[in-house]
Image (cartoon, rainbow, N blue to C red):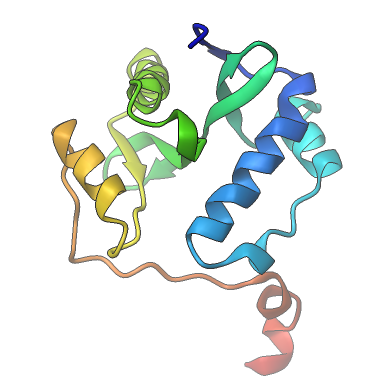
Amino acid sequence: MALFEIRKGRKEDIPGTLALIKELAEYERAKNEVEVTESELLNDGFGNNTAFGLFVASRENEIIGIAVYYHKYSTWKGRCVFLEDLVVKEDERQHGIGKLLFDEVVKVAKDTNARRLEWQVLDWNEPAIKFYQKLGASLDPEWLNGKLAYNQIQNYFQNI
């Protein structure tokens, strides 16, 4: 097996990044939920007003893993980093790639003095739960995740 590298994402990594996002969505039983396009990812990750940071694992010019994160703010804690997705191609798992990608996001949190690094994991995703527990993470069963989807946002003021 050829070696891989972990590095900051680049514009040319976006097609491989989107492919892994779609692979994750399929694994999470939501393959039809991916709406983001390559163009949006390029703009949001590398445009004038970036919305996310990206680390990739690559081997021979193929993206085999990604960590997508962004900065957020907690009124109780202050600056935080949110790990949106950590994905490693299924046939590339168990080689330490996920851990190395996670390490890079932890470095971002440390370097920016973030008081908390957060992420979500589905309650049925046992491999991911075990991965995070192995890293010493706390998984909080107490908080519910709320959201408004695009159509709900667009129609919000009509419905109240």
